[in-house]
Image 1 (cartoon, rainbow, N blue to C red):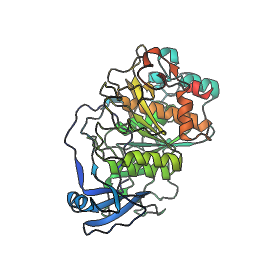
Image 2: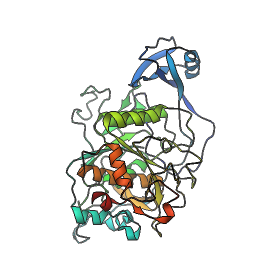
Image 3: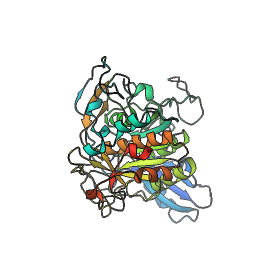
Image 4: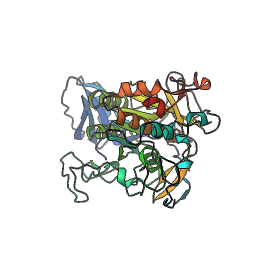
Length: 433
């Protein structure tokens, strides 16, 4: 998907290095106009409406266009399309294939061969999210299918554990090179790729993962349960929408993030996972206002990773995690040992909401393989999968009510009382009781 926006949600991976010189797209400007005013300027090559009074302008020189619009009485806000800090994404560790399970003797709920490696599924007394016990108590299928958008490096939609849970745009005919449903995207069967645009600047439809990060996130959320292969996702009745917005080097732009969020919301996603982020917010209000817009108009909950700098977000903000949107759920990472925060995880008594398992998380990677990764990037999809399962059984809940239900039913831990708003670890069984 690649129109003229840059959604930024799912990659609070392992930001191990930073570039403190802001980078921006020299062909693109974000503008907010006053009272629906139109814009006329010789530097504007094309104009795309995002939402409300926000527009993305294409130009030959962003600096010249920005300078010409500053002081225009029709413009309330003009900004470059900034990229995030340069950072290193978590890598797969020794990817492996998993043989199909033919014995069906793993436990009474799952027959997926590697489900025992998913420590997030354990009971709360063993530092997990009470996933298996929730399914034992309430059954494996929620009543309503929930679409979760993975805004990331893409998703391997051919993976054996993901192909059956991929969202399908029923209005689009695959691989015919035509925008069949007239939504502005060609062949967007499972989502869009904002990093690979056509000659008109539109995002394309093939969001195949070229890194592994997005595929790993997708598997944690919703890998097919009980299919005798690989792993099981946290959510049982979910469809995964893939949106490729984060480059392999991790420097997504604000416009791409915003466009990704808008595409997801308009096409039915009720939860968006953001396992990405940055330490500075030169781009201003665009992403924050987009999160607010999709919450109010489309009922979307955005789940974001807190970041991996072992720092206090109350003092050193990270974005989008530190935006104060009511429909934003910010997730810290725990380790499997002693129910403690992972050593890398950010925290914040006012700005981080909840904790979920994020260290040594086993999930899908490209080519029908599986691997461990660590980061708040892995905690966020555990939380997003839990939220999707709760929503599938309570489809009447809006994003704020869903967030409140989850946060009010955590496993309370005294050591978390000064580290996050809820003071606890996500608890699926508790949220369903």
